[in-house]
Amino acid sequence: MKNNKGITLVAVILTVIILSLLAGAIVYNIDKTYENSSIVQFTSYMKMIQKKVDFYVEEGTNYETLGQALNSSNKKILQDIINKDSENLISTTDVNSSKLRYFNSSDIYEDFEIADINDEIIVNFENREVISLKGVERDGKKYYVENGL
Image (cartoon, rainbow, N blue to C red):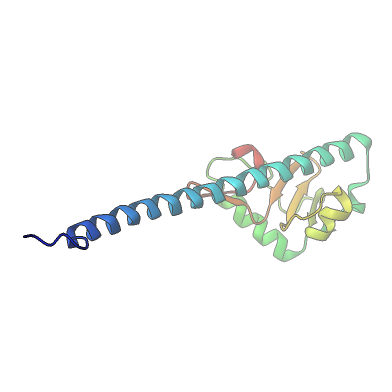
């Protein structure tokens, strides 16, 4: 008589393989979900800042009272971003323009009244362009302005 107690080694191996495939699919989807949420968050706060910039320009607000003047480090970072812009999404070309202003997280909160943004931006008040210095990654490419996403 045959003893049918326990499970076979083949059944254990198949179970481990199936569970590994499921775990891999879950991790992949979680990673994609995180990337998509970062893109949505980036797009959302960039649009909010853009609306505030449009408001300030239309109201004739003195842009020199907002944010900070660009220092040499900001200019270098901005120039690097402009040089990487192969799709010509950024229309700002002159990093020495007097209409450029730098905003860190606290400036964004104070001047645009938008909380919990962990980014640094540069605003060109001449053409109303908002450029993130950190950007967001999508499909292996880094985006620094909202209109490219």
